[in-house]
Length: 328
Image 1 (cartoon, rainbow, N blue to C red):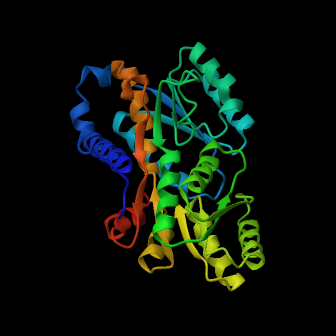
Image 2: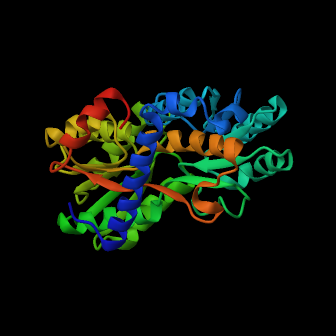
């Protein structure tokens, strides 16, 4: 794997966090049962609110991590999602009305969530952000952030395309206006020496995704790499390449077990992993610590990074077992 020095530093930090999470979950229940912190934080209800699009398996791993952390501490996890930012804001307000002890929320479209997040803070409910909104969370007054550095991920992806000898990349965005997705493509374009074109598709309709990519490949034979921003869309892109009779290669952001298998058999070049399980786990863990002991992971000034890292033919075997279990 080729890594920039800055990327290697981020990955080292992410590895430390992964070990910390494992320590929390390994035998943690018995050890924490007798602590004063656990007693004081009993009977907590944590609301997790995401912009999940139905059918996107990425969110299964977010939720699995959150549920594991909640189970360790006897927390009631109230998970809700809606791809509409305005509906997400409504879900935040509903959580406020329920009097939850903490809210973990994704900030794909932060401007539309600003008011609801402020209302939670005014009500004395701690809010942490995860997965998206790394540039905005501090300005919104959010306590902690858990996720990947999308600018760095996009830059590293663009550099990897350069190393692969790519000349024209098609970057497929499944949700227009989503800050993290837009940043991935724009940062990739800045680092990539070849030509880049962005294609917007309807991520809620896989047939639309496939037909849109197929049509683009048929109309532009210069595209030699299709870049997708999620595991299910990478698998759709493989079908599109075949349907279009194209020689384009596919690489992606994010993993699922199908992508891992495709990397193993050589049909997908590589994936950039942001460790969604860890994002879900740490978001609940962070809110538990705030309630139990007044701790602030990251000190409220720095994001807690869970990636990015490359998964390719050289290291895919290291994550295949966990991908099959649904946690990578």
